[in-house]
Length: 346
Image (tube, rainbow, N blue to C red; front, side, top):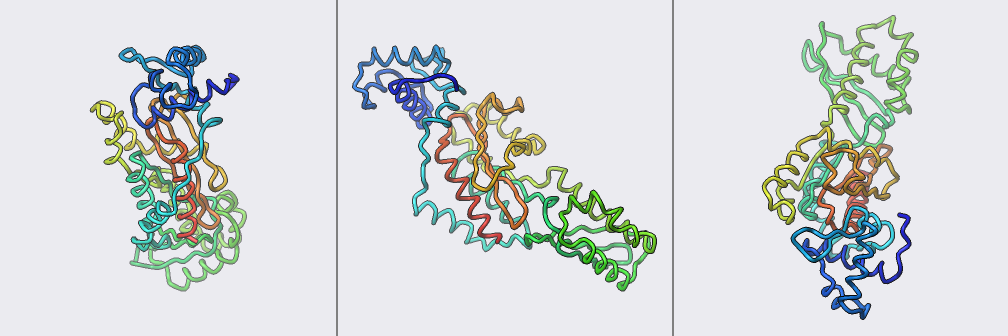
C-alpha cells in the first residue's frame, strides 16, 4: 500500500471498515461524526471520505449516500489498522470443551478434522476448511502386512507423528504369513527415518537387492505407497463445515449468492487451492482478500488460513466468507484452533 494516510484519514477509514463489518450497511458521514472522537462536522468527514474514495479505499453504492470499503481498504486495514481481537478465557474454554466432549483420537479416525471444520463453521458462520495432514512429508516408522483373505492384504503404515494409514491391496495369489513378515522386517529396517517422499523417489535403489528375490512382494509395497499418494492427491483430505451456518450472513440472503457459496464449498478441487500459499509455520496466518485470490470463483470472498502440526506433518485450517468479515477475530480463532489440534494430536 503506497498511500500515506493522515491520522484523520486512518481513523475515518478504520471506523468505516469496522462499522461495515458489524452492520453490513454503507456508512455515512453523520454516523462517523457522531461515533468517533475526531470532533469533526459531517461536512468535514464527507471531504475526508471523498479523499479516501479518490484513493480507491472507499466506494459509494448506487443506492446509498454512505460508503463501503474496497478490497484495497480491507488490505490496508488488515496490514496497518487492525487490532487483533483476543479470545476471552470463557471463549477458549468453550472451544476446547467442544473438542474434549468428542473424545477424539487422531490415531483411529479423521474425526478430529471433521469436528474442527464443524465447530469453526458453527462459531464463525463462515465456510470452515480443514485439510488432513500431508502424509507425504511424514517420517516412516514401520509397516505391517496383514492377510485378510486369500487375495487381499491389509497394509498398515505407521508415520512417526502417530498417524496410521491403511490400504487394502488385491493380490493375484496368496502370500504366506512368513513372507509378509520377512518383507515388513526388511522394509522397516531399510526405510526407517525417511519421509514418504524420499521413499517414493528412491525405493528402486533402496530395495533393488530384495526386488530380485521377491519381485511380487516389492511390487505390493510399491502399489501400497502409490495408493496412499493417490488418495491424498484426489482431494479426499478436505473437510468443509459451516454450509448451514453461512446463510446467516446478510450477503447470502440472496438465493443466487447462497447457491454460489454452496457450489464453491462442494468444489473440493477448488477449495484445496486456498492452502497453496499456507505452508507457513504454526500460527502464522495468511489473509487473501477479494481480487487477491487467484481463483475467479473466490474473487467475491476473503480467505483466512493457517497451519497446524501433527508430530512431523502439517495440515491447514481456514475460513472462506464475505470480505466483510471480522479479520482480527478470525486470526485469533484460527490460531487457537491450530493450537488445540496440536495438543489433541500430540
